[in-house]
Image (cartoon, rainbow, N blue to C red; front, side, top):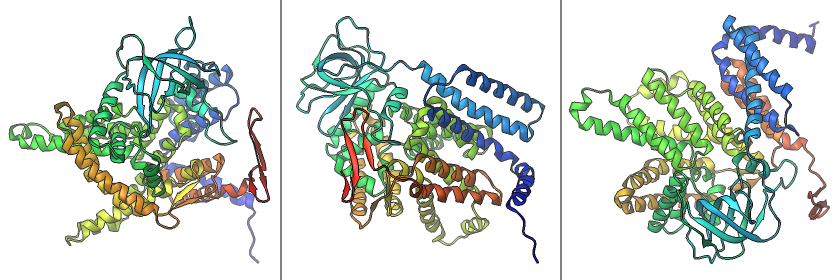
Length: 568
């Protein structure tokens, strides 16, 4: 008769092996510091009120204890305390950020005249939207501490420029609360982004007073957008402007829907792909120019000279596009890669990704809750983990001399990266959008190379030639490439079942799947495969949630309820 081991005894056996497993994974333990910091950020945003000073002092004590244990030798206790200290760092940093933000504005609910200085101008499909700083709407009031975003009338002939002072009769409204429990919180997003409210014009806008100095890069961004759309007036121009300046507001609903349903919407958002292309093109171009000058090529290391200059080009692109989260992540990793190149260390690694995540969370803690942060870091985490685990046979395959091996590697790499990135971003996509793009791999297989080798290089050349007034021909070439991308998007979006609506998974399901992905990617030993369990449970977490039978808005003016025939 075979004796059965009780679950408690099996659990004790597993825990007994934990120190040995962690000892083998010792070099991987710091990779969990960004995860701990993210847990602290999430814990802060789960609270219903601001933390007291006791919690902050506790965090300082944990940080001091972690430093003391680090001084005396880490050990498992020191590592555990360091995780707690990183979690408090995320929690305390959020509290500090919230304390230093200006208070929300008390906006009147009646029509009034608003006067303010234009900080930014955005082109919408049929109108302009302006962001006003130092806004006033009553006599004698001090300038508002937060900017106001206003949509001008469709027929308004005025073309405001950043720095000008406008006066317009408008109706203002504060940021809206979540539409239903678990929905996106516009109030939280506006608070941490510094926005005071929004509204729309009821009459024509007029210029008042002299124009002052525009905010940094705002006038440059606006001028580039106008010159791009002058050469490319259709949807190609709106997408070209989005790729160059980061503003998607002018893209019409039809091409946006086609890009979304085909799984190509990420190409419209300036991201790590675009930053890598810009830095890579700058790096390759500078190395080529150095090689053309033999005297210089024999006296300097072209790679080490071109890398910082390529990074400087990426920094300019980062500032031009407005410090968006995926760009911050990509630029931080690129900066670490350049530092590693100059120091003779590995350029890209999970440590660099973790440090980039901590930098972005320190810059914008609330970004952790958005799809941009979650999908960007999830995709890169999975891709780096796959690159680390490449099988030994791949090196032998690459060493072969047959002509077909290199095209096969390129095609296989595109397929693998599209598949891995799509699977890694699936939990965040289901949580935020409730959609599945079934043919995204096929669409990306065609559109990503077109973007990398045609669209973005032409856009970079156009920007470099703008001061000379020679941007027309590279922008025309960029437009041809964008036409190809739109054709791919429209074709794939028309396939049966291209975009499937799926029940959104709850927040705890997304957290569980994200933890499983981290467990799967950050460890090296076979116990990493335990991460598949929380991923599967997280993806199926919508089945554990019972949707409400009725919803009532906060002011009780809107009620929705479910009947036998469907929702009302």
